[in-house]
Image 1: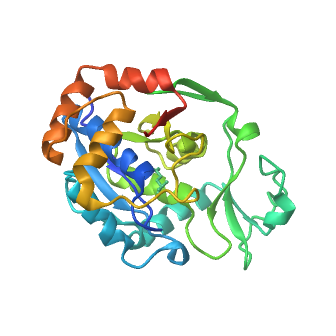
Image 2 (image 1 turned 45 degrees about the vertical axis):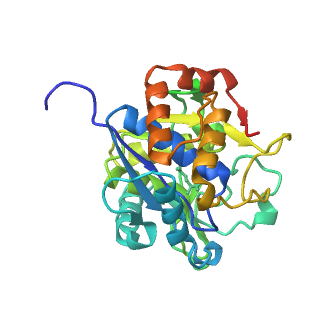
Image 3 (image 1 turned 135 degrees about the horizontal axis):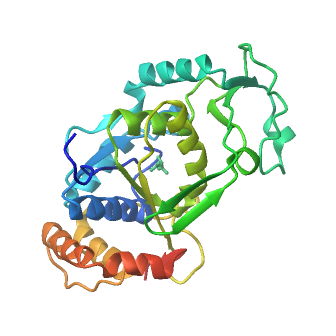
Amino acid sequence: MPDGPLPYRGRFAPSPSGPLHFGSLFAAVVSYLDAKTHQGQWLVRIEDLDPAREQAGASAGILATLAAHGLEWDERETYQSDQIELYRANLATLQHQERLYWCRCSRKQLSGQAVYPGTCAQQRRPLAEAAIRFQTLSEQDRFVDRFQGLQTCAPREQAGDVVVVRKDGLYAYQLAVVSDDISHGISHVVRGIDILDSVWWQRELYRALGSAAPQYGHFPVLLKPGSEQKLSKQNRAPAVQNQTASANLVQIFRALGMNFAPDRPPQLLQQALAEWRSGPLSAQIHLQSQALRLD
Ligand code: GLU
C-alpha cells in the first residue's frame, strides 16, 4: 500500500420519509463541502428500509433538490432496499460470533430505561415476532470527532445491546448503515450531532465485522429561526423549494458564518469551498458546538 492520506469517500444518507427540509439540506451541504475540500468523493445513499415511513416520490424529489442546489454526487446513487443480501450476510457473521439474541421486550416494558437491561440476553435461538439484538462487549471506547473533539464511553454499560433486526423483520438502521458504509468504502462520515450517540454501536459493529471505522464529524443541529427548536421533520420543518435554491444556499451559508451575495448554486458552492478550505468554517462549527441558527 502506498503511504499517504486515505482517499476521502463521504456520503449523504437521507431517508425518503418526505421531501428535504432545511435541516437535511444543511447536512447535505456540510458533508459535500467537507468531501470536496479533501478532493474526495461524495456519494448519495437513500435509506429506504422502512416502507411504512416512506413517502411516494420522496427519493426522486430528494435527488432533484440536491441537483437543483448544485450538489452533484459521484457514482450512481444507491438504495438500501437493494442491499438486503449484504445485511443478511453481515447478520450471519454476527451470529457466528454468538453476538446475537432474540428479544421480545415491548416498548412499554422498556420505557424509562436509557440502556437495554439485557433481559433477553439468554435467548440465543431464533424466536418468532422478536427483535434481534447485538451484544455490545467493549468496556471502554474513545474516538476523536472532527468537530466535537474527544468522545469517550463505556459502551457495554452506557450504550448496551442494540436492535439490528426489528420485530417486524426489517433490518435496523445501525446494521444497515455500517454494512453500507463498509461496502461503499466510506472513509469519513459527516452528519448531525443528533446521531453522535449511535457511534458507539456502530464502532462495535465495525469491530465485529472486521473493518476499520471511518473518521466521524458530527456538526451542530440547525435551529428554526428565532427558536430553540431543531429543524426536523418532527418539528414540521418546511420542504426546501428548488425554485429558491440560491437563496436557500445563501441562508445556509449565513448560518455557518459565511455571507455571500446571491449567485447561481455552483458559484455559491465554489465560494463556500474556498472558505471551508481556509478553516474558519470548521472553527465556526467548533465554536458553536451544539447548535447553529437559521435566520
Ligand atoms: N438516514 C439517516 C438520517 O436521515 C442518516 C444517518 C447517517 O448519516 O448515518 O438521519
